[in-house]
Length: 120
Image 1 (cartoon, rainbow, N blue to C red):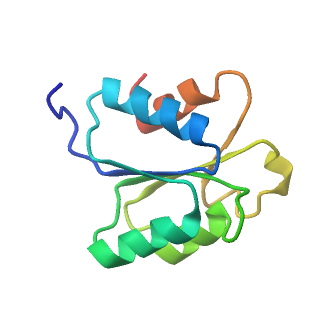
Image 2: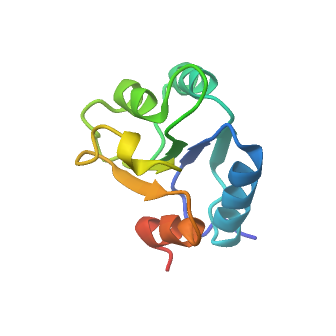
């Protein structure tokens, strides 16, 4: 499939099945520039090495080591035109709710992410 959407997307989640399904859904929608990581440290290292920030970051909140909010604060402290979506099973634990879009990992959450990105 041709790359219908040139936006660069970063997916970070330590649950590989979620990352896999989300990546496949995005590819079906024409996104082909997608990087997937199972931890925030590797994602941050890659971003720093490439010196290219993604347009959209979809990250889990709770991961070993650095959590999703910490990653976002390091990548885009001012949120400069980066759309950031934080997935979590427990939204009550997430701080900075007003700064980022929070999506609860519950029934229909993948569709909610696509809606936020603007695909549905």
